[in-house]
Image 1: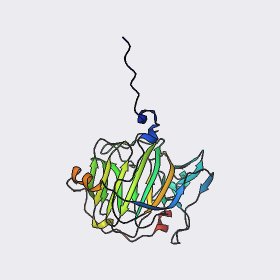
Image 2: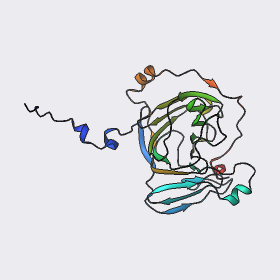
Image 3: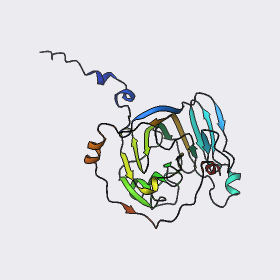
Image 4: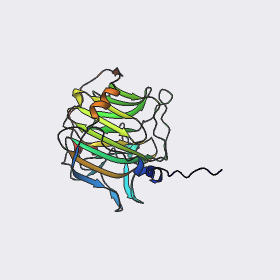
Length: 265
């Protein structure tokens, strides 16, 4: 006997990007203050050191960046650059987005194309990262898995042990920042949350870093200012996700004052 027809819910016919659209979990977006879909081919140059930031993107440590095929693509610095520097050689692609107000919501996509795999405690290489303010807040990878750090990268506030950035896969990320608090979501992945006095900083630029000797791609970047208030479900989410115990990874030390322009060194 034929089975009766049962219409599928509308959600089943939607593309994944629409069915699982990443939305702010905490803050209320206000005005769109910056966006870049990288539709215009161009090459990006580092801002002059100790000068006001006049561009949106600032390549760091001599790494090489250009817009090609509709994405922002970065690679390590040249062999000549690396040979001429004792430190900060630019062995992995890294770039700063300077168009960020003090409090904001940021959404973007990134992809690790290739590079030396980072394996904590097995080899000394560079872990990928998303940094909010220079050494102010950082999502990165280490012996504890994916971590949200504070206090000059010395204190672990949140952790997702099983989460990895799979090379070749696009990951959609949302950063929500206000005052001394931060929320970072990965679509179809974990949400990191932290609140710490060290987050209350004048350094707001967001820096992205890929794998050593590899390529990193960025796309569909949007920044919003924020309104007062919170998303309706934020308080309930906090109750269901209590903060894990803080872990001191190494001794904290004062972080030297820096500016957005110094990201181009």
